[in-house]
Length: 194
Image 1: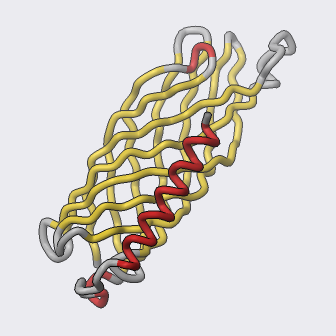
Image 2: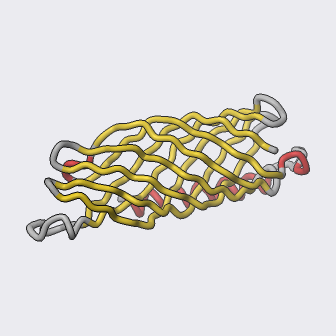
């Protein structure tokens, strides 16, 4: 299921890129290129195995570079917060690096798709055992951006992060100690372009 969702995100990104390149290039690419920073805050839905399902808030700090109106590379730090229940809970932080592809609809409004690599560290507690786990996964998302001024934009996006949790050290009694967790983040953010 996760592989299917990620494949859909990749295909959507490819379609968005093809459409963007086929569109008229009336947008000023010199003004579109450059370094930018962003901050996102929003609702996190954790779809996990067993007792790891939960809802929470999450925030993200981003740093990126736009090559033109269509293509950017972006890295970020994201704090997924704490989630879980009484028997099992976790706290996940991660770093991302990915490609962001935009489709300008006007001088002020753009649709975008993004995808790339997530590196995450999860501190967890299962029963009485505390430990941590590192994981690498993929992420994919879509969004819309609205330019408030030449430098400031507001954006709304939805991103799916794939995160697996290996808790083999927590208990020898657990037959399947790998928990698959989808972290779904719907957020609003601001972006400043230098």
